[in-house]
Length: 81
Image (cartoon, rainbow, N blue to C red; front, side, top):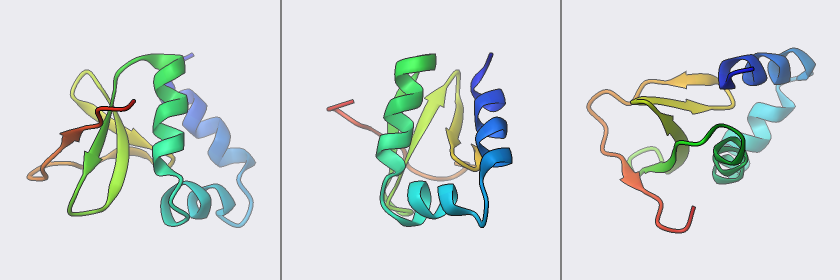
């Protein structure tokens, strides 16, 4: 199973976009990125202009919505993850 399979499964169970509200709008994007890091490896990264954490695996970034477009955005590694 890869990270996109897990995200897709979570989205299927997601009613009324609750998970997206929690993990994106609710400020728990770091927690989601850290949980996925524990399962899939990679690096938790912070996007300052979006005030958002993502998981970066092989130059692709992910959050609860799937692949995140980070083109032309500054990514800072999270030192604590």
